[in-house]
Image 1: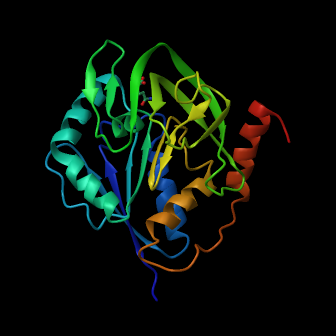
Image 2: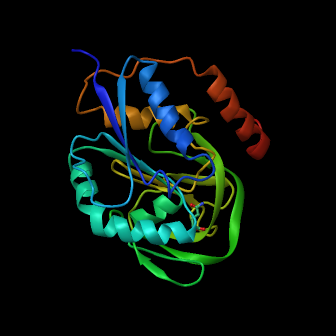
Length: 248
Ligand code: GLN
């Protein structure tokens, strides 16, 4: 069987792209190409959505409240049906910060405006009294990641709460995470991943990048992904963990 093609949809690259979020796309692209997998990236902005049924991985990043208002409206009007169909067909979703908030039922902006989300996952976000800004380390448990930690940078005032029974992406070791109260960070619901981790997320978390690529290609190819030399990426990861949480 020949190498599959990885099709990525990058939603709202102009409006939702802060703190290096585009680095996630570059990481996915490079890690696939280094394995001989062809990558096609479609940038999708506001307006009627193209058919996303052939897409393997959908990514969107974070944004300021002002941009989120534009995007949430557009997403509810033009994108939700196409995104749902892509997920039902096996696509993986990674949504960061403002994008993560969009996955849920609703997002209330810092000045009190309630924006309806896509309703793809049972979570909601309300404004908090302060911004949570800084480096963050979380520990995953159910994804089989080695190492189990993920590192990143968070900057949000929204406080996100998961509905009953939903798995967070991980447990906060350092930082605020979803809301600064319950110790959880992000969501991992089937193939839908939401997180507050910018940084960007994937360059320093190559194990998560591969989990996403592997799942995205599951319907197209049988075998496991070829191993890559992640010495540099994991050294960067480890340096953050050691500094913020202490060496094991
Ligand atoms: N505007 C949102 C908040 O402050 C999301 C910010 C972001 O994407 N960094 O909570």
